[in-house]
Image 1 (cartoon, helix red, strand yellow):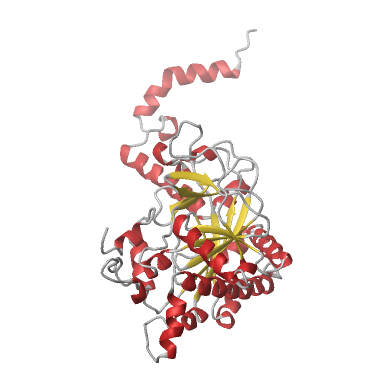
Image 2 (cartoon, rainbow, N blue to C red; image 1 turned 180 degrees about the horizontal axis):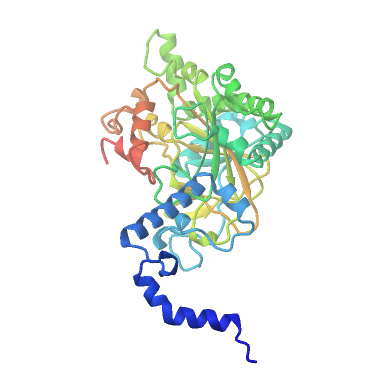
Length: 416
């Protein structure tokens, strides 16, 4: 007796009867087809899922995918905007840049006149300097970097409590630079939190890690005091403080006499940044080229280099100095100095091996104040170069477009 395998019977049945069953509208045997409209809907669903994933942050993307082999398309810059990978690019310098070093002890000691000249040169020629001997203890600095890193190590559910697109929120966790506006995302997550008045904002700060509030509050108070000391020196380097003292003696008001009092009630925001290792660092950036809003930014960073500034038309890497602050001129100081001290474009590189943590402390006048060029720095030879501006103008500008380079400041200029 001959036996026929069941597979043979099934294949014969399908060969002879499948076409008939198809035309009899038996859907189980029809080949699956998708209309163009359905294909578009399916593709959009997939894109929506990816967008949702991206908005969780690059830290989560890195954690969920283990060791990524490639950078997702959403993070890949156009070729002309990528960091250089060879020595032939004329816009990239081949060596690290040694920024001017300002010794804060000299600014408050007998060498102040010489230190003020060095400070003026740094603000005028570089827009950046490194500050040493600033009297903030190494323990406070290390603790701030450490607690910031531990915040980013929290589960997403904990970090997500602070996710919002509201730019006026007292605390805000997010990714990229402006995740709702950026065409290409930055390889960076951030946590922004307002610091002044401290009693008003402290209750909004994370309760986890358990020491976050205590460490960050101490650091905020110390950096605010340091900012006031630096700002007083900058005003003197501009020739404003001496004029103030003379005018106050004569009973005059030159429009600048209360600025230090306003700084004492300044707007103060801190931004903790986290840059995970990147599988293809030549295709993306931790932060796109930009200038900082405000008067001064005091940057604390770990030992991993990544900050680059544009100096003499070239991108150069800033070599970190342990326990030093990188201080840079902001857009508001450029406006206030009527262009004498200019904010400078800077960006952040990422690398394949190490994550990087930094904490930026941004200081300016109170949010409800108007920023304008100092009357003492305006004359026939140096006419007013910037229109008056305020925080609301800045928010309106950045909430309606993708900001690049120094676009906002350029929009405030009156003359070339």
